[in-house]
Length: 253
Image (tube, rainbow, N blue to C red):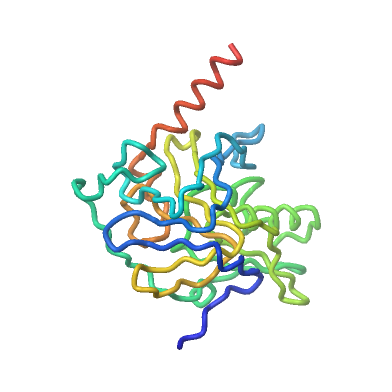
């Protein structure tokens, strides 16, 4: 039996938590993890800076079927539209270790690794002059911001490391799911999987267990099951984020 890959800095969740990807249909979620909307919010300069938690969604049904084709009328849940919708369900990402294919840049105290295949276009790395310039700066405060930006990357494309111990700086996430909304980019993002939840194909093939993943839910990623930021280029909307934002504006009017 092949040994389960676990990304450095990740604490695997309880085996009760599992996401199984059906070959031509939805994600099946087991273990009833908390599931809530996570909207990317900007700072005073219009740069991605933090997530705002919003509406919560139930995962009480075992398993909970979540849409991955982008066409369900009951998003985030599956309603069977994948059987009628024209989309490519092929899982093209290899069950590889994310850190096997990274480039890196470093400063005096930190190193940042980057695997662009897992970039979900959340843009946290663009704030305050950009993560590369911040990392390579000799300013301690700027390097701290670089660590924050890498840690905020929901898909784990970016990771910050201590140069001395070569240990990753990782937030401690409890097993949970987030529905990413990105109104400033005019699109809805993927499903943010946090806290070392196991993800596997229908045939039992397991992907590397990671602290941070984002799964595609627009159906258009070229790195399925992972999000590759395509939702932003095609301006895909789930309708959920827009509705909540409109309700928020009306409440504050």
